[in-house]
Image 1 (cartoon, helix red, strand yellow):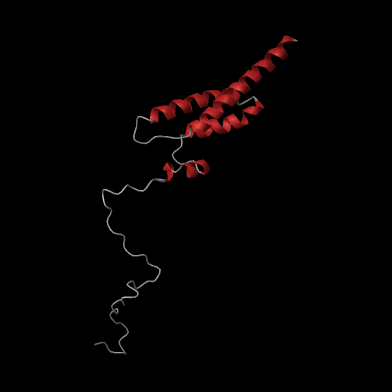
Image 2 (tube, rainbow, N blue to C red; image 1 turned 135 degrees about the vertical axis):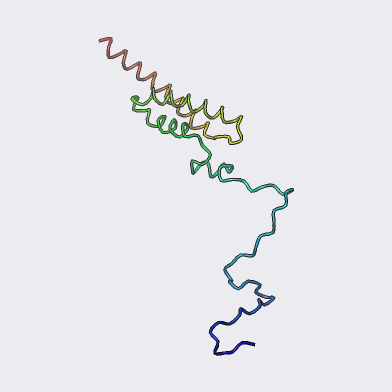
Length: 130
């Protein structure tokens, strides 16, 4: 068969107990059955979307952060505008095959933008009145 002095020996056939040469190698997956549901993407999981901005509108992310910082009142009007654009972007994506998420952030930015803009207007009119 093979000479013990020969440095290159053919691989030995796998034993029935260990069908793989590499114990860390996973067995080959069977082909997917078309009747089985496809695995969900990362953006389809609500828990992952809560932690990571996957599948989320960039406008909604910006609206959420601007809404958060709109308590300074300076960014409130910008938060209001970006939130409206974010809501429009999310609603527009529903008709496409790739729906965007982030309506909660967009609404948060909208509410905080409205409150901050009202407070900014109230402060402006009180300062200019005197």
